[in-house]
Amino acid sequence: MSARKVSDGTPAWDVSLTSERPVAVDGGHVYVATSDQIVALNVADGVKAWSVPTPAVTVPLVAQGGWVIATTGNGVTAFRSADGSRVWTRDLVGAQTTPTIEGDNLYVPLQSGQLLALDLRTGADRWSKNFVGPLSEVLAFPAEIFFGTDDKWFFCLRAADGERVWQRVRLGSIVRGRPIGDANHIYVASMDNTLRAFRRTNGALLWHPSVPFRPTTGPVLIDAAVVIAGNAPELRAFDAFNGRPAGEIKLEASLVMPPTFGKSGDGMLMSGFTGTLNGQWKLVLAGPPVPAPAAPRE
Image 1 (spheres, helix red, strand yellow):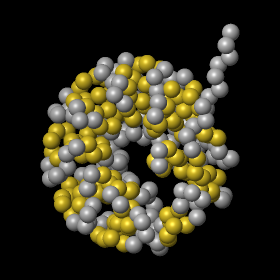
Image 2: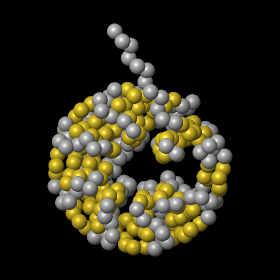
Image 3: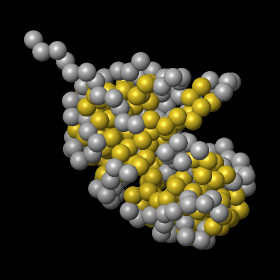
Image 4: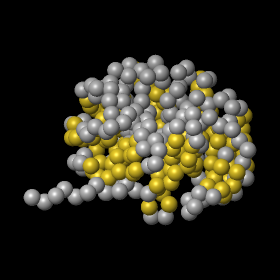
């Protein structure tokens, strides 16, 4: 486990841990899932804050708002991020998609197509609904949630009781990763190499440009641009309002896994590994998308 300085990529600290899943970062800690435990490290120096035994996780850890959520082959467990104390465990079959925290709700999609809304504090059911699974990750707001199904539908449900608000016609392909949204729009990447924007209130399709690669994760919203990535040496950005090209990030080699985004100072940065699956990998840090050239005036 290695921490690198944003300024020049040199090591800040290294800890001998092996993990097959992305780490989670929240509240001054880095959370690492090894084959038999979860380890919390201090962001500043890599010193271990706590560790707890757990079966191997099946999806990335979720760390948010004082909670760490671990999904294993046996179900879902909630820990307190401050000290690693176990709060509750739910035995669930087929929890192989990253859950979503929103307020006191935890949304857990199952391979069977069942979507569970749990009380984050206790693990008790709030409601459950059945769809055609597997389901995508859930985008959650206080009043509504959004997700895709394996039969290529895209849904908006009421967060309070899971009742349907709207349902879009089939997308042409399954949803990739987690959708993202702002006050007026929901943005969805799908396996047919398309980025779609829907009106948040009624699901009307607003725009849907294609990209020259298959998305490997959900889109990312950076200011007024929606950025989408795949196993390609570039990332494409589109204007969040009208879907027009808004820039790109060019890389020397293709990404070998989904990139991550985070703020440094006042700016947003992207980090990712490039190379080939069987060759040398490079850790790359890049800035915001380069704006697209202005259209010539007539």
